[in-house]
Length: 357
Image 1: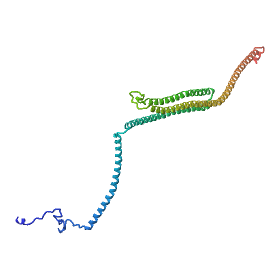
Image 2: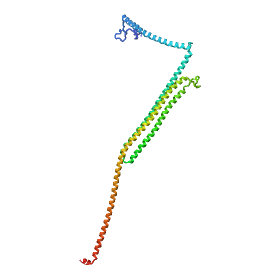
Image 3: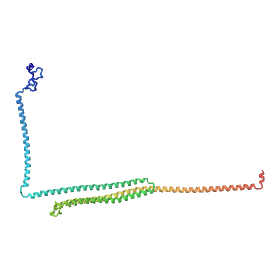
């Protein structure tokens, strides 16, 4: 134990170059743990110079940008502060006309609101007028469709004449053609009345909208307006809007007249077209009637001849029957006379001899 105490124990490895300068993992045990890096002073000085130059260039570049941004900020702030200062001065500075300016601003806002409200009303009026125009156009389209159907029916009836074989069929076709034409022409009056009614209702609806708008423009109570309505309109302003809406009413009235004229022209043209179709049918049936009348006359003569021939045949048959009867009677008479003569001969004087012979 004393010998062991006299021997020094190796110190444990510490990962520190200052404490353990040698590498314990080295084969010889004498290699340093960290290699010494020697940098020349001239290299360090060159690096420091480059860093200083780049720093100065960056600072110079940033100074330009910062100066421009600062100048712009100062300018904008000066303008904003100037405007705020002017507003505050106008608001608080006791000067002449301040009350008038306040009233003017309020009234100007009211007038702008009135103008915007009128523009919205005119826009709604235009939309409704466009919708009414579409409805009237739909009525005109339906009338044209009914005319096309009517003309097609008449054309089909004309084509059916080729299949007619007697006068009764032609009379039926003619009756149907006249009935359809008269019915269609009578229905045109109802269509015209419906178009006139639609045009009148459209005009009255637009006029009612304008009337209601003007009634809602309440005049100041101090200027003769209704009490308790908080009117904000001047009589001159209302009169200006009234003239503007009256012009729109006149346009609507002119459109109403155009619609009525279009309805009347439609009725006249469709009635004329129906009459022309009926006239075309009459021309077509006239030729067919002539042909069928000729065929019926020939057929009548043929039937009459056939009947006469049948009557003559019957008469001939009756005459032959009577002749046959007479012949039979004559044959009977002849047979009876011969028998009586023979009997008388047998019963005479030479009868015995004959019998004996």
